[in-house]
Length: 236
Image (cartoon, rainbow, N blue to C red):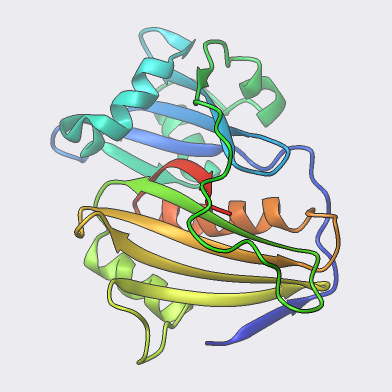
């Protein structure tokens, strides 16, 4: 498993939004554009989800119920395509909406935030920090949906897990950001019915600025491979 090293990570007030295109039953025609943003607690676990949906008939509307359906309703989920902003913009133009608004403008469309229950970290493992580190944390980001075989192969090539990876681990990686060490694994959980990224962070100091950008980058990579992120929990 290769190790990436970065000297610093910028502290960001807001990461880029997540974009989806909803297609018709044939999968060939776009019908709607969805924009989402997870709301994170100071320790970077998920405490809420903001969302807005655009269709030619209704324009923009905030809809937490639609976002819940994207994750819970298999028939709707089959029509959801996680995409980069450029593809969402193209669909928005094609459907007659013109250029997609900038991200500050899209955030103005958010209204009925879906709140997630607040809970203390689940101590499933010892939180003792490695020698020379201030703190050790473990995060799990859960995903809904099925990972297409070709996209799974792309992730495995991007983050090779090695021959001795535990059962169920498709991909793994490690990154040092300043003095902080991040190690992650993309694995199947729940008897193979769901996917998750487990991220273990060893913080060199009390500052945890590196956690949010790394979580967002990993989540985005898996989202664009075809899965829909559901939440990030902290285990330790």
